Image (cartoon, rainbow, N blue to C red):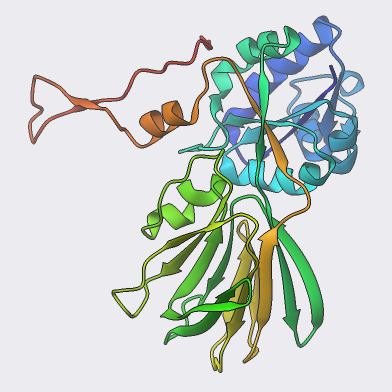
Length: 314
């Protein structure tokens, strides 16, 4: 198996564990391709020899790797997915961030993870991706997203008026700070923080979640994954932002139109033994946490749910 390695070079916690991983892969004669900024950082810090850490462009890392290891947080994995997703290379997210819904093994578990991968003891999950076709004054543009598309007023005063239709049938005209169109994978991201539902990744669905709608009766709605959603921004005098997985483009046009539907490719995420979406929810959202019998000075402490993953870590 060939490992592609990429990550977030701004994370100080990345370097020492990654250097140990490179030593282990080299000693075990396990081939790897490492993204240029990561390879450069390892060499410049004197953690590995240049001969054992040749730098590669990210597209080469994705093309040559049987599995790509993404070291960082969810944002790092999303950026990696945008380079590897279309060719179907499976991704394993290694968390050095904070929450980590997508990067769901910790960096201290990486050697146990390599053992499992080499033994073939893993599975891949196909995650729905979305495609957006935008029509603006500058022409046609196509974007895709694993988490979500966001139309947002970007701090400007006033609301955005957005007309939305599904499969050609009018759904609603939203007066809001913006609108999120997310996948089940993205349902635990921005959509969740604005009141959207959590959807398990195996469900084929698209979620529409308004951001601070002016009308209290306007609620999130879950649509089938084969729906085509068309949106039009109406008579807006303020600039606004369209973002695909956090990568933003500013618009100041009055009548931006775009459609969203299932992308023609999925994103493959690697899952190791014992990993389950419900375990992630319990761990990250503190579901099932119990209050300690002994109160602290100003209230009760809570115990995190047990980590049910068999990966031991360091």
